[in-house]
Image (cartoon, rainbow, N blue to C red; front, top):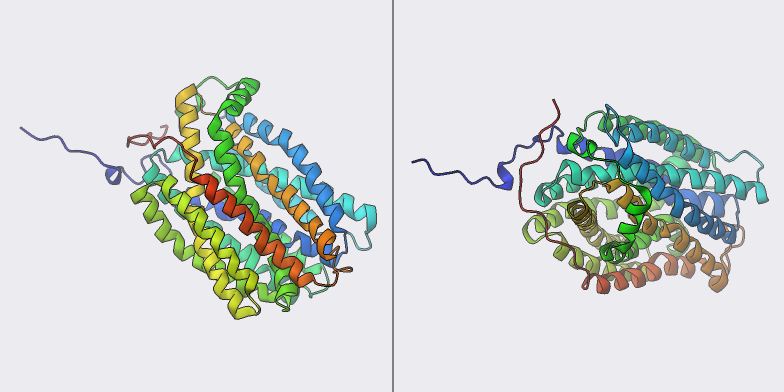
Length: 454
């Protein structure tokens, strides 16, 4: 008698669902370039070069958070209810990519001579549109991860690959950007380089997102279900305690990294006393170390599970910010940056997997696949980034006298040590402690991934 063969996760065909992991993962490269250019350079562009007051920046970010609290769930809801021959998510990805690129280019194309209220209004309109289209893309892109890769071990691999592509995008959109904007296409004190760089990145992002969107194969079973109701879905999400615990703790990580990304160029200029283009080296070290660490953290996740490693990574990231505060030159800053890269890669490898467990549990409990709505609701916590970044920047004016590049105050170096190091340290320490008390369901037992529609 022939003994039955036990099927394990490793035995599942690599393309059982019709989508190779790399084809899905490469989309992260395209979605990351525009928004990280905006987050990493908008303060330098508007506040330090064009002279917009930091208080205006803070007000715009606060107003946007209120708008986003409404538009994010609506965008996710529309995605969940979409039924088309191309799937639920792919049409939105194809439409959202050029819209995000266009708004990002406009954000860095302020007409010559525009200042005062006109400058603030231009910033408000295109900053809000850029963030909104980024929300549209990421709600749909993120919803595909649990759908295409339902097993946590394989999901960890797909997530590791996409985070690796995000790090490559960060090399392009953050580390290379200061060189392009100040040396190749422009100068330290002008804005022409930002517009040219934005156009280049916009074209690249569209091409990559469309490559991904045309190659993924959504699960047809999800699209044949009845369409979820908006208010009933929102109510169920708000009643889910995991939405609040995972969302708020994850926001401590997200806000911290938003502060780092938005402040690194000014930290290099004022705290280290170097030209902005030296941010290339600091950002490059962080990203290269994070890329290498991502491999190790992903292996730990596959062995010990996402939740346990998530808690450890939070603590590692929190402790890493102390070194940046005490760095007095480029070399000490590079060493401290490497420590940040290690902690950051741990969060990249785990945070989305913890969120995916929440989505799995919601689908199992309610019989509806409303990943778009749920992720958009989670996006509300992510959009706290803009509010906290604005408040943190405003506090530099209140406490250190930094109001703009035209009025930097007596000690802008200490101001941006506070912004880049102390604020993230406090937030991530809160997150590391709170993560010890967060619980999410164990991953579903291994099961074959769905076959693609014929």
